[in-house]
Amino acid sequence: MRRLLLAFTVVLLATTSCQDLPTGTGCVEIPAGGCPLDRGGTCADPTCNALYSCTAGVWSFLQACDQPDAGAGGGAGGGPGDAGASDGPCTMVSIDTTGEMQDCMPDLALPDCGVAAALGCVQQACSTGCTDFWLCSMAGWVPVAYCTADGQLIVTN
Image 1 (tube, rainbow, N blue to C red):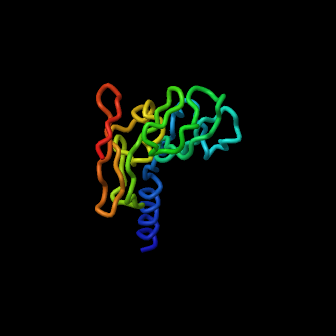
Image 2 (cartoon, rainbow, N blue to C red; image 1 turned 60 degrees about the vertical axis):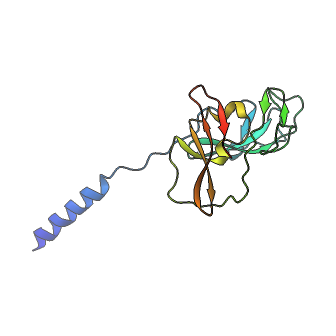
Image 3 (cartoon, rainbow, N blue to C red; image 1 turned 135 degrees about the vertical axis):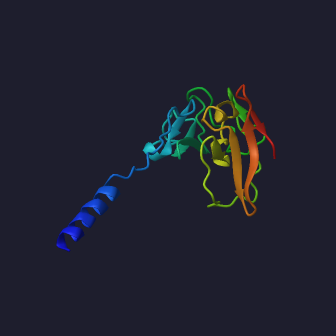
């Protein structure tokens, strides 16, 4: 009986210790002029045009920085959702996020991404690895934008 219990314990430990651990996905290249907020980026840095956060392997626009002399772009055009806001090569994406909720299930997986991944400069939205952008709403996930084969963002809402 003692040997049976020992054998069962060894088998149980072996099967639970050999399970694969989930692998994280990191963000690769931050959009031009952007600074990572979760790695110490701040609008006080004169080289930051915008602040981004890495979420599930995708850079999400958080805030435009008013830096008239910073990098290529500049964030003087306001925040996400400002229709036609632009300062240099950065044209802000305009997507209506009215009614946005949190914690829709199931979670999205690349190439599907939350709407936050599309907000920011329209020129970089399709370089995130995302092809379809979804808004979490009371009705569940609603498609709001997608990337064409040639890398153009098309807003559908």
